[in-house]
Image (cartoon, rainbow, N blue to C red; front, side, top):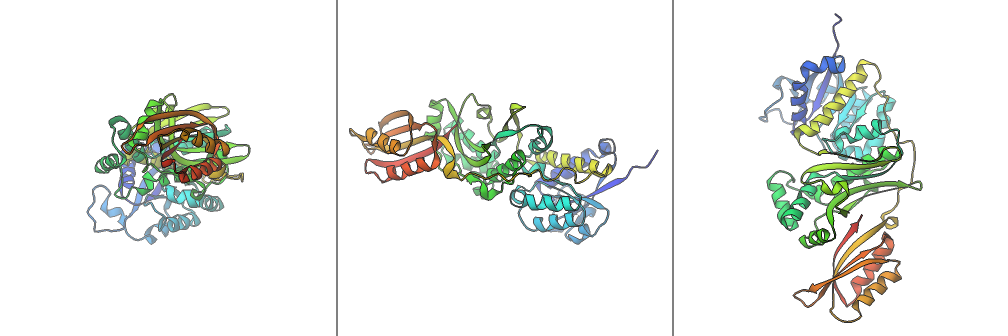
Length: 429
C-alpha cells in the first residue's frame, strides 16, 4: 500500500475559534486519510504569549515567532484565526506570496481587502478560503460560490449577527428595553464588553459586503454598506410591530436590479409570514432568491467555538483535497463584473414613522401635507392616546418611497412647532 502524504498546517491563534479548530481536527484525525486522501497534521500554532496558561493545544507546537511558520517549506496551509486587520493582513499576504494556501475566518479583513487578497492568491496558484467569515455555522459562502453558482441571485436578506438577534428576541418576548436586554446578553456572553460593532450594525455590514460580492459577481466593500443599528429601538417600537403582525429584526439586505446593487443593514419590520421572522435568540439565517432556486433559507448557529470551527475545518478539508489533486487556486475571485452601488439616498423602502404631535385640529392635515409635498404616500395612520405631556402619538406607515424624499420630509417635520418629537423611524419590508 502506498504511503499517504501528510499535509502540514499552521494555526494562527488559539482563542475561541482556534481552540475549536484544534479540537475538531484532532477529533477527525483518524478519518482524514479517507476524507482527504492524505493525513492532515498541525505542525505550528502561533500565539501571542507563550507563557499564558491555556487548555488545549500541544505545548510543543506553540510558537510566538511568525518566521517559524513562513519559513517552513512543509507548511502548505495557514489558518488565520487571530482576527483584526494587523498583523493578520501582513501574514496572509506573506503566506500567499510564499505559495502557502490560506483559510481565514476574518470578516473584517475580507470585507475590506478581499479582492486584493483573492488576486494575490490567484497570482500564486493558492486557495484563499473564508467560509467562516460569515455566519460561522452556516456554509453560506460555499453555497453561494458553488452550489448556487448556476443561479442569477437577485436578493439576499440575512440575520447575520447573533448578539442583536438575541437582544431583539428578549425585547419582543419579555418586554425589555434595549439597555436591559443588552445587559443580559453581556452577562450571558452573547455580547462583547464593547458591543459597538454588533449593536450599530458594523459586524453585519461586513458580512453583507462579502456575500454581496460573491452573489452579484461585483466587488462590494464595507465602505459601500449603509449601516444602522438597534440602540435606538424601544419596547414601544416592538409593541407596535406586534400589533402590526410583524417582528422587528436587524436585517442585512443586498439586492441586484437593473444593473445596480444596493446593500444596507438596518432594523426592519418583517411580516410574521416571512421565514426570517421566526429566527430567534442567537441563531443566524440567510434568505436567498435566485432565478432557478426561487426562495431558500439557511439557518444555524452563527458563532461559537465549534459552529465556526465547523466551517473553518470544512475549508481546510477542501484545500487539502485540492492539494492532493494539484488543483489549488482553481476557485478564486468571482467578481468579474463592475456594477454601480446605489447610494442610500436612492434606495426605496416603506417606513414606520412614530411621532408626538400637538392635540389640535389640523395637525394630521399638516403632517400629511408635508409628506405629500415630498412624494411620500401614506398607507396607514394610527392615532394613539395622549401622553403625560398632553401630546398625541401619531404613527404613519408609508408606501414605498425614495430615501432622499423621505428624509427631506423628516427634516421639515422636525422643524414644525406642532411636532414635538420624531420618536422612531424604521423601515418596513
